[in-house]
Length: 239
Image: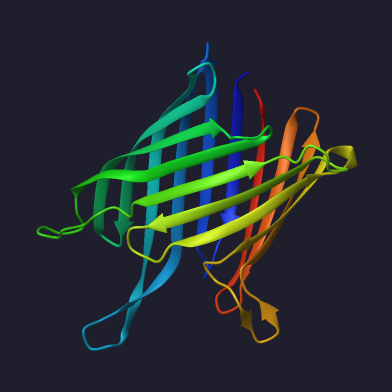
């Protein structure tokens, strides 16, 4: 069935993000169209003398077309996204073409799924200024998901490893528990930031979902004590 998802995120330090996608099944293959945007809010411009000189804005936009299809008697699912990325900082702009690749596979035990993806494989077509050797932030991800067979409630356990090409790798862990009335709870933990900041634990996140007669409402929350809170809300359903 055709489905759509819209998501809005209130991110750190007055930044915001949004996502819109449309999924279109075609036989065994699934096609999808998507748009992502990220805005950095109003930024202070400073002149050569160090004095304030008004404000400026910055943003990123990416549009993509995706395809996914099961192969090898449904043991594997392969997916790919081709996308165009456009960025603006004040009067300067840049754009790039990139692809994302992904694979899902059945695990060695029932209820287990293995996955891997590589994002932003491509090249900058036009940089912010002539002569700049801009590059894309490539991400390699690998993960595992498992649904225990004999848990009292429907439970999904997940673990991911993210390896950026411009930062240190880190692990994330999460769980999803389905309760009565279409309610789902999702705790999570990321080793990208860990330990304590005063009395507050770092790396914790939480979320919840609610089924609403063919629609699904999801909410997620994470805290970065030095920078602020992150709130994400999304709505998805058949169309």
